[in-house]
Image (cartoon, rainbow, N blue to C red):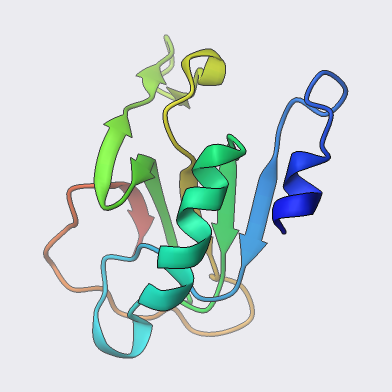
Length: 123
């Protein structure tokens, strides 16, 4: 992964998107908890290569975070005139993460509490 990410010519490919199965961040615990060993190894690689967007499945719901690294929200999106979140990665801080496992199965239940890095979720 390190070699592949480092080989990207960002002048030709401006967005770098990483995909995986089990999320690095999620508002649920238990069955849906993160693989901390995977996160510990891969998360610095994502930051070093300025990955813009990280997509995960596993959890049958939708969640989207701020630009998060090591459990801290490093940047928030701006709202456009229609109230839609807009991310400006010209001042890159960290990847935005999205869990997109809402297709093909009934939706999982989330707890009522919301993690500080979570911006949007579908229940």
